[in-house]
Length: 287
Image: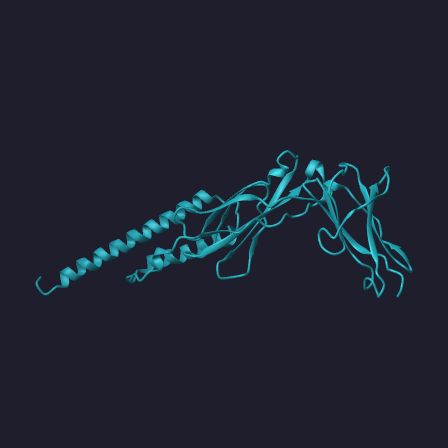
């Protein structure tokens, strides 16, 4: 056997500022034939006594959990000591403020609903984690979603602090699973990035079916109609490119356009059916 090498890569996080969990990597290849003990120690940077973390392996191997009695607005010094029969080694000291490593619970009451008859959109609403409602902070949210028969998630990360998002560019008549997570940024003025929560429980919803994809027979149209279709295709290509995810576009205008398109399409089909019927009547032998 050999003496232990110093542990590395200490990372810590606090759930709602109430506790602290830390993990680390053992130095070298770990125990190397001799049993090695690891002890996480911590103290306030400028004063206070040295403490030892008691709840080992709470978050898996090479981890320790401090459940209470933590100070805010004062940095801690944290390190890990490894020891066996042949010696002792200490990690580098990690200095951190509890407020800089806060994570929280996943958002709850996630609701996913259709947006009227718009076949390529879903509306997502959720509630902020209740444990942080009394804290001064600016939350960030992410959404991820996937179709029912896929394991590939698409992430929308430009949501900001709002608790409502419109997903656009979806497939008509398709079941989607949606999840949301929260990052409590800037608790009491902290300038650190924060740590993402776990994802919420998946919520499922389906987009409306595209009625125009049925077996309707369309008549040939003239050049003006062809130009209109081309303009519409360009418009939708632009909208889907710039309105992906939770867009800051004028959604009302987009909705009005889609509703108008659907109504005009139905009206055009009806007019074509009437024209065909009249043409058949005029061509009948009895006339």
